[in-house]
Length: 117
Image 1 (spheres, rainbow, N blue to C red):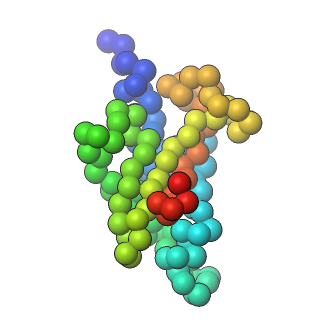
Image 2 (image 1 turned 45 degrees about the vertical axis):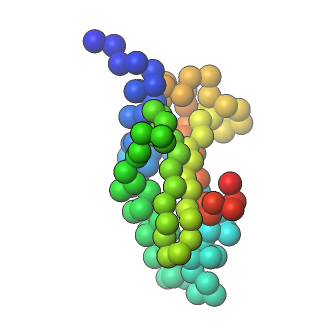
């Protein structure tokens, strides 16, 4: 049984969101991190990042979110947060020719404020 490409992409995106893809990159915008930590630095930044990533991992997709499970939005500490997964070639220079093929695709998960999008 062949798995359709859209389902392969969704499963790979789930692995990325769960932190199980060693080739994926996870980025948090400075604006998002600053808004969640205020003037606190150091341990507050680490805790904010951990809280953000935990929220991304437990995100429950809704029917309107799309079949690839590559985008979502939630509220955290009074802020509207978005996350987006983009697909690049292995060198992170160009878009991937086939996001359903993990051997030629590197995923980049960006967590940001809604206003950063």
